[in-house]
Image 1 (cartoon, rainbow, N blue to C red):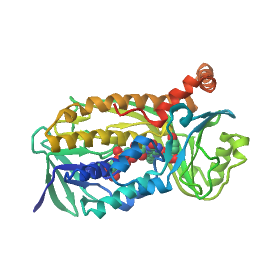
Image 2 (cartoon, rainbow, N blue to C red; image 1 turned 180 degrees about the vertical axis):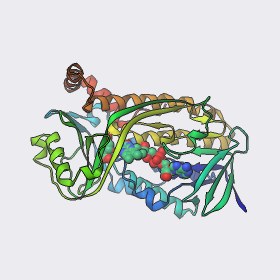
Image 3 (cartoon, rainbow, N blue to C red; image 1 turned 60 degrees about the horizontal axis):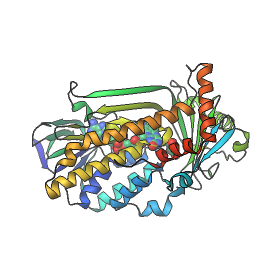
Image 4 (spheres, rainbow, N blue to C red; image 1 turned 90 degrees about the horizontal axis):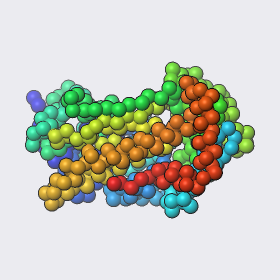
Length: 394
Ligand code: RFL
Ligand code: PHB
């Protein structure tokens, strides 16, 4: 027996993109169903991004889920770039008049889940074999299995918010979809530790042994990363080895303030730049990691997902409240313009701040010259600052 369901927008994926879209649509009384191949505990446990642009904060306010963020988030007015021991502060507030907020993706996800559960909205977790169909028709549907039972959801629109390895992008025929990709020759090893941060602000460091980032989740919890080899495993990095390498890369002056301790999370993520075009096929709309990936160096992955969702929710709300489809029709084109600018920034900062095995002595000198230029030029620092705090939506 097949269970049938009906909704206005079927959202595939319950990460930050899918959850935020559902909340913004709920505010406009638009009905949604969310499905995910994992469950809430698993999704909330994924340790990922940590820095929110003001535009992302505004979207969370509009979704009615920003109270804890305002109470617990840390406002950051700047961050440091370091190069072989020299430090240069990017004064975000002074250069742009704007700051960013340090608040973990895990917390954003928790707040969104709480809001949706409080409204008794529909989720299907642990679903399998999700297949979006009839996407070019006015009555698309999404089929899936849960606990061995078949389900089909008929809807007006499908939102593909199912991340880089989801099924939504794959539902676009290969003669329509164009993809662009750069895979970086290293990964990031990240640890969480219950110790105060090294400094009040984030430090991104390029050292001859590789990149390091000193970040945080609160005044008592730190999140640190180092560049590692792609074939490294977390078991290659016991805590002692991590702390020694991290301290070396930060340099003695900064490392003097480093408090070490046992890590309670340790993971390795590959670095990739990726864009899929177009982000619409019939009545399927892609958003977030389902359509694009950035390397984490500019802290843009989550913010870019939120920016997509702001545009997609605006378009769906215009359709349902005034019958105006202009925003739906221009969604892919408008969003992709900004996506490419953010891809450029993330690629540029990643290229500046990492050690690339293939770099010649000339390219290493170019990296150093670029750092020296940024450190000596307000214009160059401002270009970094305005990208870091977030470009306008359109
Ligand atoms: P997500 O968070 O990947 O959520 C997608 C959801 O879809 C579900 N799903 C499916 N559901 C149903 N059917 C299927 N066939 C499905 N396939 C997948 C998944 O279970 C999941 O729940 O995408 P979303 O919502 O677009 O959010 C994007 C952000 O999560 C992402 O951009 C950032 O986390 C990227 N990112 C980072 N960004 C930063 O700004 N700073 C970071 O430090 C940072 N670290 C990271 C990251 C991404 C990582 N990934 C994807 C491997 C570290 C990692 C490890
Ligand atoms: C983090 O705290 O996880 C973080 C912060 C800044 C980045 C990437 C990750 O650029």
